[in-house]
Image 1 (cartoon, helix red, strand yellow):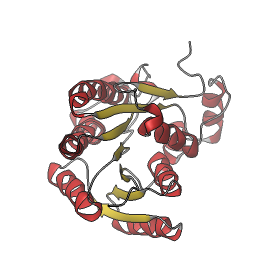
Image 2 (cartoon, rainbow, N blue to C red; image 1 turned 30 degrees about the vertical axis):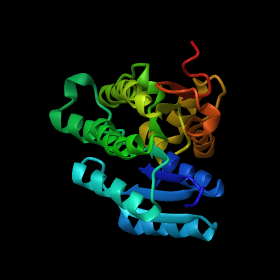
Image 3 (cartoon, rainbow, N blue to C red; image 1 turned 45 degrees about the vertical axis):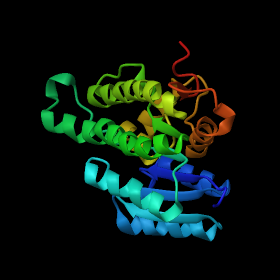
Image 4 (cartoon, rainbow, N blue to C red; image 1 turned 120 degrees about the vertical axis):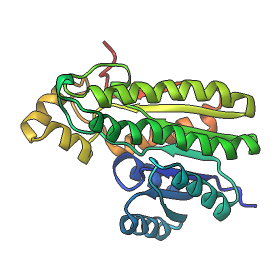
Length: 249
């Protein structure tokens, strides 16, 4: 059996998830990338293979348990085990004041960010608990510990992800499995561009970051790799905040 770790990444087709896929591929891991868009997923897998990695795309929508169950089972069938899972699939939803929010907007965000994380962990832990080993990294946000006017639903979803992470960590410890989260601050991705709407608003937003810039997807991927690795072997139930100082005060 290969000694190369098997890494599963949801939400791997863009932003932080995509950067993590390349980071683990460069580490010589066997990488399973997943997302909803088949053509983009196949292209990503081909890019990873071109780097010399063993990589495969499996299409799945984390909002649906049958998809998640099949994703995990297919990954294990392909590579024989599951060592690391990065649950990166997420949606920021539509910005609006609380008085204008709707059940539909709530479901659009919570079904991906919260239910998707829960279902992913459920089936990842099913495999990892039987192995007696594994590391799960969920993706939270600076908004996991702060409030944000106009982003109540997204903020609530990330608070929920952190609660799920801590609870799952307490359960998984009995099986030798670690569960943590990485909570990025503003990262230079399409999501940040959508949230800030234009260059002027983006610049004003980043002026409030103590380090005076956005993070990069590669910086977030490095944090994910650390938390997932044996270098963090005594770390579970924790949230690593990587936000340029946004939560320091």
